[in-house]
Amino acid sequence: MTHYKVSLLQMNITSGDPEKNREKALSMIKQTISKKSKPDALLLPEMWTTAYQLGDIANICDQEGMPTNSLIAAQAKEGRVNIVAGSYASMKDRKVFNTAYVFNRHGDNIAKYQKIHLFKLMDEDKYIESGSQHCVFKLDGIKCGIIICYDLRFPELTRRLALEGIKLLFVPAQWPAARLDHWITLLKARAIENQIFIAAVNRAGENPEDEFAGGSMIISPWGEIIAQADYKEQVITADLDFSLIEQARSKIDILGDRVPHTY
Image (cartoon, rainbow, N blue to C red; front, side, top):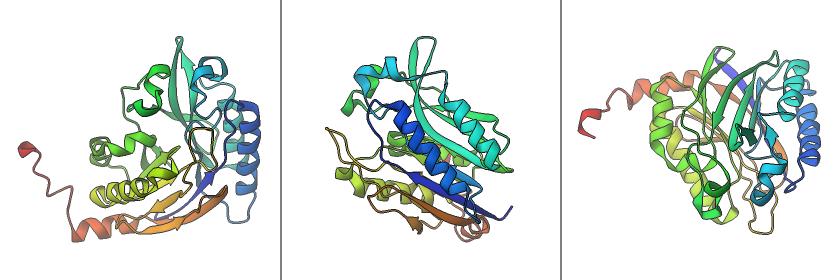
C-alpha cells in the first residue's frame, strides 16, 4: 500500500468527566468515518477520557481499558477503519497507566502501549506508573509505532522504533501552548532524523492549570508539515505517500550511515 489516509481528531477535553468525553469522541469519530472519503486510520489525543485530573484518577480511570475499549472497538468494526485510540488512564493490578490502545478494521485490539516517560513537572509520576516496553504494530500491512507526549523529548525511543522498520509514528499528546515551538521542532526533528511519517494529535482547549496548543500535524519524512490544525477543536486529514520514505532514504541514508559502536 503506497498511499494511506490518516485523520487526527483534535478535541477539547472536559477534566474528570469520562462520559462526556466519550460522547464527544464518538461523535467526532462518527462524523469523520461517515464522509465519502473516509480515512484508513484515525488518531485521538492523550488522556482524552479524563484529562489530567490526577487527584481523582484512580477513581475515574478505566479498568484494563474498559468501558472505553468496547466503545472504540465497535466504532472501528462498524466503520471498517483503524482507530489509534490515543491514550487513557487505565488500571491494571491496582496500578494506573497512561495507556494507548490500537484497534484494527475488525474492531480487534491489536496493540497496547503504556507511556514510558512520565512528566514530573505536573506530577504525572506520582499518580501514574511508567511503562517499560516500546510498541510496534501493523495497520493494513504498514509497520507503525506509537509514543505519548513527553516521550517525544527522548529521541532514543523513536530511533528504536525506526530501527525496527516503522514507516508511521503516532503521537497522541496534551501539549501546552507555552511550549508550542518545542512541539513543532521536536516533531519535525523526529521525522527528519528517522525518515518516517509522523501523525501527532494534540488536545484543544484549556484547564485551570494550562492552555493547550492544538497544532496537531502530519509530517513527511523530509520534515515538511503536510497538514496542520490551529488551536481550535477540529479534524484534519492528510494522504500519506509512503514512496517518499524510500525516496528520502535513497538520497540520504541516515539509518545506514549510523556508526553505533562510537556512540
